[in-house]
Amino acid sequence: MLSNKSVAVGLVALFYSVTVSAADHTLAQNSKSFKLNGSQVEEYTIKAGDTIYFKNEDPFFHNIFSLSDLKTFDLGSYPAGESKSVVFETPGEAEIECAIHPEMYLLLTVE
Ligand SMILES: [Cu+2]
Image (cartoon, rainbow, N blue to C red):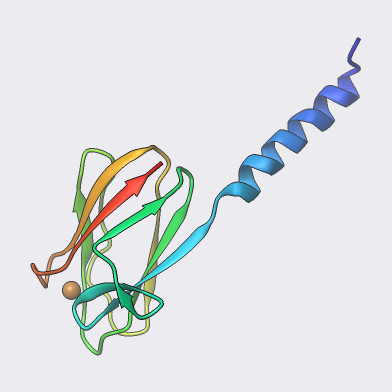
């Protein structure tokens, strides 16, 4: 029979494993496109629970948003050098755009 202590240890271990499996991703806004390590990306896949940092590397403002059912958000206008993060908790697809530059587009898949 399990003691209360071993149940507690098990729960802590489970919580810890869920917590550490979530990853951070940085997608830059650079030359009016989404970039990962300097290369343009129009499709990107992450896992549920992951966080994306949208980092503005252009010398002008971007305003990243999504109207997708999966996750609706609007990060507002922010200048060069700033980054804002979004956590994607649920699997599905989200179209991510910029309110200032309509040509910017990213299809995000959350597995
Ligand atoms: Cu923009």
